Each structure stands twice: as C-alpha cells, then as structure tokens.
Length: 161
Image (cartoon, rainbow, N blue to C red):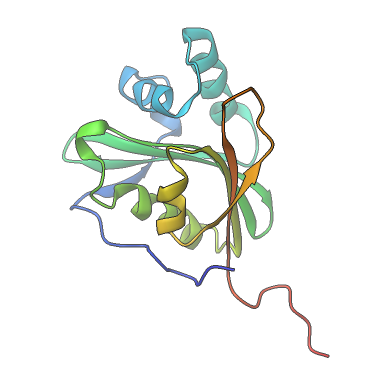
C-alpha cells in the first residue's frame, strides 16, 4: 500500500478547475485525445458525453494563465474509492508535477482512501512515482502491456484482532 501523499510534488503556478462546462471545447477535447487509445472524433465525443451526463464522472483541468494544460477524469466507484479514467498533460508541460498535482487534488477533493487506474507501459512509471503500486494485467492484444495501478491509504480496511 502507498503512503498518503507520497510523490505528490508541487506543480508550476496554476489552478485546478472544473472542466465539465468546457468539455466540448477543442482545447479540452485535444487533451482528452492524448489520454484515449486510438482516438477518433466519435470516440472523443463519447468520452465527453460520459463526463457531461454520467453521475459520478468528474473532469478537472490544470489551468496556467488562460490555457488548460492538463486534465484528469475520475469515476467515483463508492464513497471513498475512485478510478482515474483519463489523465493527460500537454507535451510541452510534462515532467513539471502537473499530473501529480491533479492526482493529489482528486485524492483530497473526494477524501479518497483508494484510487485505481489502468494504464500502459509508457505511463506506469508516472503512477509509481505518485505512490501507486502496479500489477501487470493479461495482454489485451499481442504485444500490448497493460497495468492495474492502485493507490491506497495505509491501514484502511484493517481491523483490530
């Protein structure tokens, strides 16, 4: 289990905003396309509709000045558990702590004790640096590696003997 807050470093000056009102903008759809495997206009529209209309699906962004440079979509699975459905940072703003800041934000905003994500080999290191544990999943397609990443507050769910 990960320690609460491990790896959640400070990002450049910016602020986290609710992106639901902006989900149909080109800027937000471009960020979502970075987080969707094999993105098409139809698939991006479907993802946008999930955030607009499904209960428990929230979309937040990281704004620097007037630009949204990152986004995180979360699905609340239960009272204190969530799943990262989409996360991306514009290429020119990566490796600055923005992704970690967005993870930290959703953990605090929803007081989560467990956060999961399914990701590829390219992004698994990011989740590990944020304090997640990663377990390889069966390959959905030949040569495609997927990982289940889990962040949990230590001691949650343990009972006294």
